[in-house]
Image 1 (cartoon, rainbow, N blue to C red):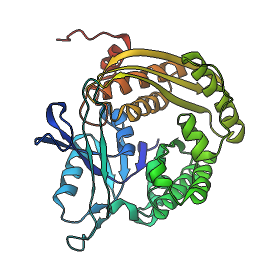
Image 2: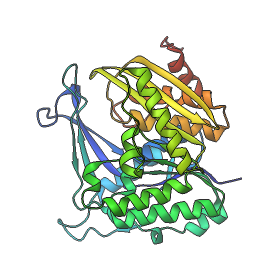
Image 3: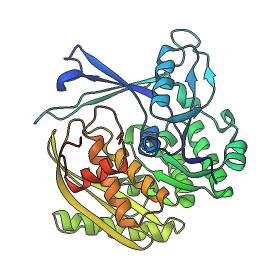
Image 4: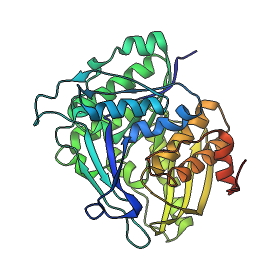
Length: 352
């Protein structure tokens, strides 16, 4: 039996959020949480008792690094990786993600402050991958395009992780998370890296733009407007993705219609083992939208690890994504599976 159910490589940072829904730069009271897209996906499995691990780098003797390590322990996520000497005030550091929640008709704003980020230098040589994969064992390795595109070093790290995962029977989950600012000037290089990872992946997650821009898949033909047309166009594209990347047996994306900052219509689509399942967008209340997509992936992967039927995996992922938007932290932290299923059922009654 594998020691770790879920493992990821990531560059950890912190998010600071103005209190009381105030805009960044206006509010003068902030909450700080540790975060990264990849570690967010581990959170549901870690909260519900599975063994998870983050591979990363930390800044040696940094109080921010100490905060991140303490928070990962609180979240039941193990971590491994070297402490890197800061080299003075202009040396390396952990990223700061400054993000407000928005309110009503004022949408949220996110400001990334990532210069000198310690995680950009992460290398496969930072970790004993032979021990981790051959001796300890991993069930699913989750990777994100955000980390893969950070630097040539992180891209190579993801390729090595994919290689080790395939060689040792671990499945691969890949959320493409395309970001134009990360790709500028590196389009050819990153297309090759993303295509190599996708070719080995068992689970591919992304919207139409992700598949088009990250993998070069031809987009859907122009069709009608509305939800049904959007779902049909995604299905059409995924069949082309599936033909090009036949190793994958699971494809998923979320559907989000923004009414205002605090009211969304939230849905999701899943193709797994040849079976399509769709949750048409349902109204949800939103405290903070950041992390909803990661929350969806977190619950979806948890269901796959549990061996659930595809419909249940999708419903659980929909619910953990919706749950993440009720929390200021960038991830869902359920106390038990029953809490998640109550979210799916729309049951918000008090439980004593």
